[in-house]
Length: 600
Image 1: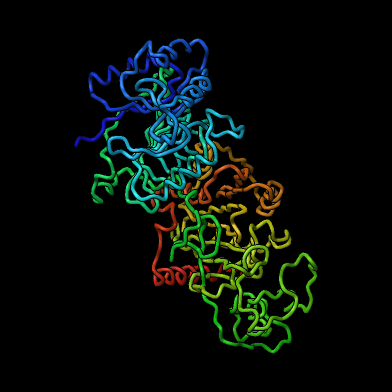
Image 2: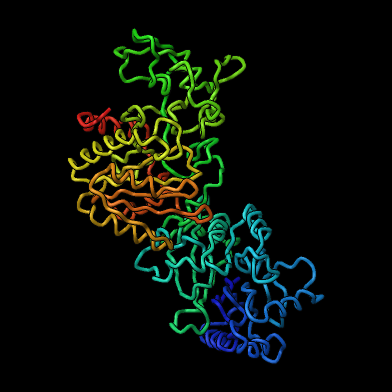
């Protein structure tokens, strides 16, 4: 059986004469084709085109081949669609389209149907909060597609009117149209859906430009997805508005056939949107709802220790289970107090004998009985109900990644590093961002930053620092990535370019003094919004405030630098895993070179 031959078209705007004239021409020269699928606005954009449109609807002109549309908005759409909905032939549960006239079918709401073996999924209408009867999709439509995504089998075609937000992420800059950076005509909900549905082809309209993205791989799937954005019929820039494909139905393909990846395939542009909480033994953090940021673990010794002659308790030992001073420490390494801290007892109460936070403190203020209160782990606002993979009190840890521990911050090499010597600077206290710590502790952070910068400069490299602040990030991590000095001047430009492609504009400000940079950053940070900032080698700070309802990749900083260094496959940390032996060797090498500079 031959593969179906399909035509795809962008926004029609009621120009059916021009559309079908082109269809007949293509059908004659390269056909025959089995069907035409239209995305984007199908109905007229002005009353002047209504007569032409109604000639087809009312049978005075004929539709030359089976035509399906999802852009159910525009002039006369409510009247035409309301009439079709009441037609007795269209009553009942019809996912394969309601008939408007002979050969013209409306794909209403959302659904899935089979066409000559092809599995086709669609989302009709556009996003809107107004709840209109026609021209918009509902939450029920979205939920239905999410349910369909759980079904077995591969979807061949996914039809949407608007583009998915972020589709140009990780794409070749040379191939991305300038107009693609405009966020209008993009919908973040579609990004989430396409990441779950994983179709072989995703076709969209609305933006009035033609764009054929490089194929991209999908998480938990062997096949790639090809995105096609189509221009409108008769657009003045003469951009392509009709496209032909002839895909073999996935249900007839072997695993080896469907898993073929073209040489220009990229990682998924929606990786940052695919973290849906599905647990995996290695790549997911149990019990943690953090976005896809770098993380690591390290061991805690359960050996009872009481070193030191002093009466006071050692803060580092109580908090981390270890102390770099060992027997030379002047404070007690009391394992009983360590266990009480692990059971949720307030650290100030253990160290000082009292807590000055009063009712605002969410920790316990009495010693806990072991039988009644098994050890619990700290995460978010002092809660100990889940395990945080950045907290030093985690009992299942990999201590070989630690490179330095200070009073308020510690450093570790990143798990799945982008490059050699990729460092994380993390607050010891469980805090969602580095601005939550009192400003009086900034000096320690500055010393760490200066030491790391000097370490990299001694190796002909410059440090780029960035942090993503989000309500989904429960424990802060400031990432420090070295780049070759020869590429340092390009860092601001590539950050700005990447943000522009996603429809954002970075705020830029240059400082000579690092403390001034941090003070200014605190004035820019709004705890009610997500916030990204980067410090680039020339002292410039780049910032971006992102509304909670806007989609922004948690790994934006890493993805940008992966592009700068021509290593796009390393944008995802899971592609960069090392063995424990390799990690241990990397840490020892770093510590040996850093020991003379380590402020801790």
